[in-house]
Image (cartoon, rainbow, N blue to C red; front, side, top):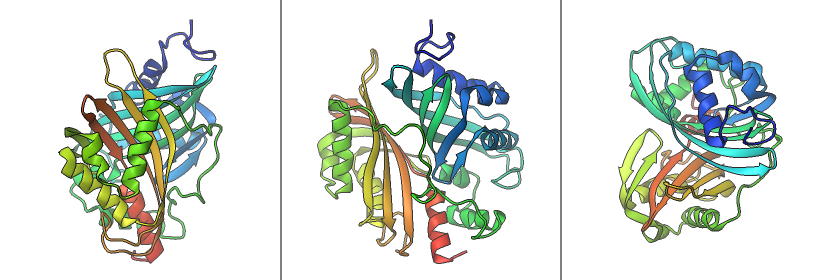
Length: 327
């Protein structure tokens, strides 16, 4: 019997479904199954672009596999919530391994071995992903290939035909309204995660030693692996100080507790405003920037025991370069 109406009987639940179709498409090379597991009018929003429809997604999948043919995507966690009697929203954390052995968007083959993460929110109905928000750690990929993130982004704009014709990053102007407009769960865990991020983004950085375990394990963009209060403070302060007046919004949250696992929280959030402060992105430029981020918290007896947060720094730099003309 299917775990939800409309889904195939082979899947035991949302986690099994998400992990299963990811492996089937990417590692088992059943690329054609995208027509089965991705809805025809699916919208995929990443910080770098907004894509609608299966054709573009199939083409992008083929290009990625040609560039990284040995790519593996083991799932670290799937945090999910029901969104009705026949649908659910999952927040999926992937740790990816790949070797750059083919030409593609990252240039000529380098032979470099890469490790990076992806965080993706997928709304699923009728045995298919029907709406998606995805953040890939592009800066980690670029840096591990030995390239400068800003220089690579500037070159990408040129390779895409220049500022007038290049692929435009996700912003409120380029976004599309999809079939899922929910906000997630309303429970104590969700409220706790929402409160922590809201306080951080309100410059109440004292919330970090108050709510994080002193030995918290942290994973940040550029595949940064860190520990402790000072590292969490440095990341969040560096991001917020670059966009001090930007509007911060928590767009989706899920709190989940499962047997044999710590309580977890998945939050999708955004910053929208001007790059008018010193911080993670250097000298203020005044560029209008939209940042989509996803954060996973794992709770412990002394607060946040583990955190994973991703933003796509290349998409942010692309907006800055296009706005300032520094290309």
